[in-house]
Image (cartoon, rainbow, N blue to C red; front, side, top):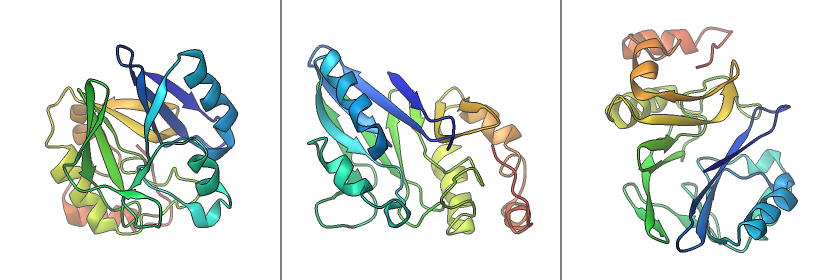
Length: 205
């Protein structure tokens, strides 16, 4: 697994590969990183099988869809769009001998997805509330609570959680840590969370 981090925006992308079959997937790649991404794939002699998007803000990033389409692999996302592979909840996406499971986790945007691979979940902007430079306030606060508590926090304690943005310099955590100590979601009720997010200043995970 490789991680690509943009220090200015905090955005983080991930490359997963099955070296035996030489197939790979990219999670939340940025169109502006196309030369770097192509070089990574070429250097490792990997064939890109899927481009997985936990969420997208294409309306605020002109040309993003077109740039990612040039990677030559199906673009998987939750939001319907011509040319997209619209993933279903619990769908399995195979690359080589590996498999990524789709989790529907709306809240940050209406069609957010998370992707589970082995003991890791790549959850985009789900837990880093307020960290997204394009949308600091969740689209649906109630749905975000339900997604976090019912889909992610019910996974085994040791499951690793990878965010799409860094928050306070942290990109990786665990289910147990976030369930207990997330500054907005941890150890509180749904009503508490809704009230916290309604305040003018959001904290992040």
